Image (cartoon, rainbow, N blue to C red; front, side):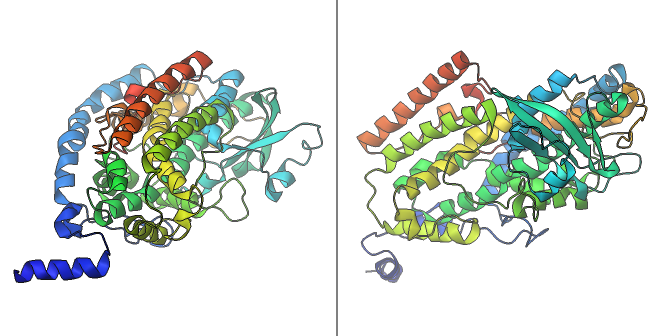
Length: 487
């Protein structure tokens, strides 16, 4: 026997028991990507994957990065649009409520009022109602550019039938509560709530669907044999993700750098404060029940209203699919146990190699990954892309309101330059541009029952898409849901 083969045999026998694998049976010969502490915020952000395989970077540039470069040529068009249709549009009280009820901003709705909330709204909570809050405290870390304003806000709502009704708005910068009878101050307060919602949606809660899951992507590629059923189940949902995330977090051209000359960087402040928003989302805010620290969930998202119903129904379809695919996996499978141990070290509250075998924990852990990087992530982008950028600003050119304030003309609340940046960011990053779709994912299973499970999964997705339309809960067309995080 050749020396090389004897070494492989010795290594296999000592590390994998009955499973005889060698380096070539793994992606990148087991020298693939792996998570590490974030270079920017090693203790404040989730682990990052910064050493991305070259072939993945090339693949990303061909299919996605090149589109970014080509789209930069639209900057003059969007600047002209900003001049032709200047400023912000009026947002009626009904439209304001609808955005908090039915868009991805419904993620902020909670009945968990903390002590600070109760102190602020003490004069209202005596009313016999079921109270909810939209707390956008996280934006207080943003360090704004000169002439641009941001304020933390808290919006108090009560539930009436299946709808949440706005009672009042607290604006932190002026420590004032506004009601719908407050004229211009009320109109300004609504804009600051929507601005805070846009900032927290894009840089606080949505990133939790991105970056913590990169560790699972990298670990799965490097630690699972390519012919293992778990690898076959996960791998159609890996493509494009790691180069994209690395570009967003670490490229000098990232919109998070927010340089004045970047025609696609729409945020109100510089990179230090913007990255702090990511930290607020991942680490949470002390004593604020609206911002718990990130924890890997083993259940469907708990979100109020139709958005939550939509996501929960998709989660259930994924759960049924994963259950069928993994139903005959041998308990204490060596590779799954090691995979879980590796993920446990890098993803908060991911079950370790022992707990992964308790009950349906394995099924739920895998379901959460697949559901998050496809439906949950894509739907956020699609829904945010549908929002009128002249109704939900990222920049405000008037200071937060006080009682009796007069609002400047809506055409002056944002500048054409601000709108151009927002439109460009929407085209490049916020609105989805799907390259590979969930419904077209190929799993390459060998066993007949798993092939049948994948076929049934596609049929179940199509049926659910149809059912949701009939229910009037249509957030994103199935054909546009991406197979992975690719925007």
